[in-house]
Structure formats: structure tokens, C-alpha cells
Image (tube, rainbow, N blue to C red; front, side):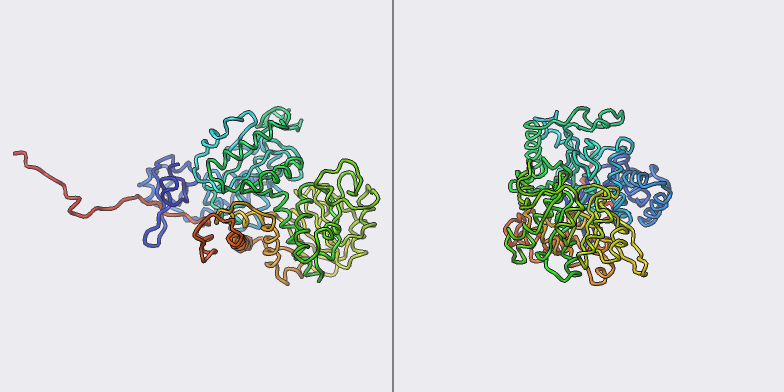
Length: 588
């Protein structure tokens, strides 16, 4: 691929060069091919010399701007937008025009922009994807492409891809089946790989596997951009996935990270179990959510002055998020010294049919592990009163599931009740931060999946709700994985993630109600997490980059993306004078 930015010389045939300590970029592209390429384009930040050398002088206004002035221009336009969807469209348009500037804007205030490029706004953007769609990003692979996926993979211009995020659009956030509109999720996820973790964007590939949709509203929508038929399931679906996994690793190598995102429960666990030991893969909804939730619990233990095994934990929901968190809690309790079966007995779940108990009909294999001896109960309020849990975790995307009675009951039998409303987007949260803090009189230890504003109590205290955002986990894990070429990703990586993130929460943060480090520090947290991941990989012989580096942080930093513009250079040099001497002849 000519002119792919950010690569060392040789990866694409052209890229970054280092000379006398300075980094410069070279490309064979000229004219419009430069200004229309988001990897290369610098807008009015091109110098006059660069404009002349690249054949773009005259294609840009006669003005020279610094990147900071360009950021200011974007922010001024951003502030003029009337709602978050328009702000999302503006930022995605910038990503399509000038990638360096897009990430410079994002990292200038990640706390401000993350809710726009990811949850909660990305959920609305996916619902409105037919309207928001401007320019395709990533690969669209359909069920009708079976037998030809390797050919489709070659359509992607980059020959070096280290991370893929893939979805089939069946369970987008808490919004359900959005079919091909779900492409907004892999795009947004990979934007955070770069903004929060420093993974190079040109080494990332978003992919949608379009097998149809069961959403009748979309099937009737004239703006829908996907296949217009019901979802294909069964053997044909499995064959598509098998060919896809093989095609990705054939083209990009067996250590290419493949992250599964927003697959329905029926497929999420099955595919994870099928591929986790064969490929470098993880499911963020199961494992990433688990990492960030357990991190919040570990931070909460510093407030309650207890061990995890001292707690009775009740889940509202028993899907992939709940089961993933529960499995990681068991692993954490085992690390404390609690036998596995005793740890499992501390965890209870309520699904759409009520409390999960032994003998209840139609339980999946995953749910059966957390089914205990107890009479069947249907109502969550009754279950809370009966079990008296110390921690209540909502992951079922049922808005308002934590009623005032439930929250008050939690406060009545716990000095510091732990209440996590983790469902996304905000409209699906089980309760708000204000409801939790007000009804528990400030005693509740609260975390949510989407952001909530600070809450000021009648006694004058201001509490800052913790946002259990998976972005604390997956960018750092991905950065570590791709830096050392990890072969497989065991669950211990996500417990390690939880521990690293919890350690970054200060006593001051805890006193303010925060269970997570400030989002403004997320890139530093991701780097520390990546270092731990790399150390784990070499210690357990699952890294493939050798020789093992002594300074693992330096290895990681050397591969991180810079949002600063590099100067363009012509690959020009001189031979020795004698070698360049022009030969002449006297024809007389």
C-alpha cells in the first residue's frame, strides 16, 4: 500500500524514516492522492516545501497552520453542533479526512469526547447509522461471501494488521439486533484502541459479519445498508465464522488479535470457547466487562475493609456480561484462598424468568454453574429481601430495575451497599447515580456503565460516580498483546487488568466516590496495564516476539502511535562526487 503512514520502512514499501534522531515520512503518492488520504493528510499544516514536493501546492489555501490551531478550529465547530449525534458525525468526518488530527482532538480531552465516539452516543449512532453513514470504514463481509473471504480480505489496503474487532450486530449494547448498523461499534472500539491505548490505527481493522437481521423495523427501512433477510443460523453461520478466522490469520498472521464484540449470548460463549485456545482472541462483552467490574469491586473492598469472599453478590441479568463477571469473581476469590465451589456459592443470578436455582427448567450450561438450592422466586425485590446481598450488579439492560425499595433495602442491611448499574447506554441503566446516593443517604458505593454527573447530597458532600467503562481494560490489553505477539489470552490477563486498574485509584478518589482512576489518566493506565500483560506473556511462554526485551516498557512505547504530524521528506541523497561525474566525449 503506497504511503501508509506510521510504518517502518519495508512494511509497506514506504513509511517512517529516522535520521539523525528525527522522524520523517516518505510516500510515492502525489497531488489529490495525498490530500484525500486520511493517513497522509495534514490539511493546512503542510509546509510550503512539502506542498511543492508532494504536488499539492495550489490545492490548499495559501495559509500555514499549526496542529494546535487546527484543533481549535475543530473544537469551535464541535461546540456549534446542536446535539451529540451531530457531534459524532462531525468527529467521524474528521477521522475520514485527517486521522492524526482526529486522535489529537480525542486525546486533548478524552473525558469529553469518549462519550461521543463510544457509549452512550455510539448506540444512538448505530440506531441512526443509515442517516449518519458518510463513508465506509472497515470490511463488510456477508453470509453470501462464503468461500471467497480470503479474496475480500485482500480488498483491505493495509498488509500489516495486528488487531481486528468484529461483530455480527445481533446484540449491540443494550439495544438488540441492529444488523449491519452495528458497524459503528467496531469502528468506535478501535478508535479507543488508539486514543486510550496508543495502538496504531493503520494496524486496526473493523469488520461486520452481515448474516441478516431479525429486526423487522430495519428490514422495512429504506435507508438500511445491510442484507434484507432474516438471520442465517446453524451450520452456514458456523462455516462463515470458521472461514473468517482462518482468512484473517492467513493474511495477517496467527498472532493477529481478533476481538469479538456484541454477539448474542447463544454465540458469544460458544465462539469464545471454540477459538480461545486456537487463536489470539477475546470477547470484550464477557471478559473486558468482567475486568472492569471486578476492578470496581476490588476498589470497593478498600472502602468496606473486607475480602471479596466475604460478600454475597447478586446479579440482575445472567447473560454474557453477568457470567463473565461471575467467572472472574470466582477466579479472584480463588486467588484469596477460597475454594472454587465455595466461591461459586457466594454468587446468585436473576434472569428474565427469576432467580436461577437448581431444578429450574431450561437452564443453559453456563447458568447451571451458578444455580443453587433455593425455592424459585420471580421478583427481584423479593430476591433482594431474601438473600440480603452485599453487592448488587445490574447487567440486563432493564431501565429502572433497581427500584427505590431495592436500593433502600440494600442500605438497610448493609453499612456500605455496593450497587453497580452497568448496563449501556444510559437509557438502559438500572438506576441513576443520584437515585443510589440519595436513597442510601450517601452510603452506597456506586458504579455505572455510562457516565453520570456528580451528585451533591443534602449534607453538602459531592460524590463522583465511577464509570465502569471497558475502555479501562481493552486498550491496555490490546496494546500489550500486539506488542509482544501474544499467542492466546487467558482469563488471568483480565484479573491482572482488574488489579492494575484498582491500584491506580487513590484514597482521595475513593473518598469522592470514584472507583476508577480519572478518564484523563486512561492512557497512563493503559501503558501500565500493557507492561503487566507483556511481563505475564513472557513469564508464561505465550509471547512470540524474541529475544525477550529487558525493558518491556520501552518495547511498548516504541510501538505506540503519535498524534503529532511527521514532516514529509523526499528520499534524496548524493553519491560520491567521482561516481556522479558526467562522462563526456568530443565528437569532433
